[in-house]
Length: 177
Image 1 (cartoon, rainbow, N blue to C red):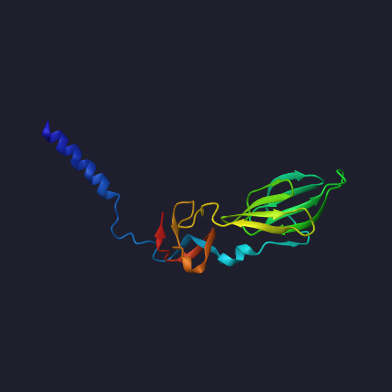
Image 2: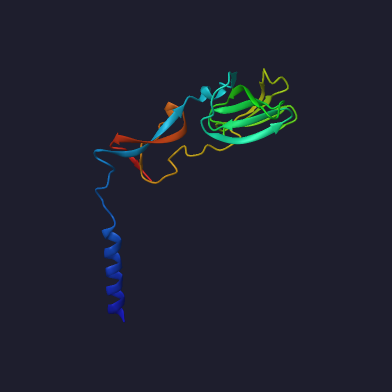
């Protein structure tokens, strides 16, 4: 009984050790890897109103009175005048860096801004103003590694906040997930 158990254990150990590569220290030449995209921490405070622009990546739409708000993922919110329901017109763009979610209640628009929650007074639609910022209201997502497995360039916190990951050809990425 001991011999078959020892044989099976030995074969199992061989299979386990066969999968280990002690020389695997990452790519040693150019290869595809995820590279962090950084934003300076102060850059997230750049919330401003600007002229109409085209929509790159449409997100949520929210109706409020005679206005429609349309999220442009990671860019901000389009403000659309819907007074003439047959012909809605974009009238402005509210720049909110790395915004993905928002809601409107009363005269306030609530939006994420990277990992902060900002409250914006939209009582004067032509001059929205930030009235409150709750810093670190949301956890950072994907700061240490990308969501996809594989090689990646190790993030450097001194370069800023990691806001995205891009797949690029790089030389010898040091990290792998």
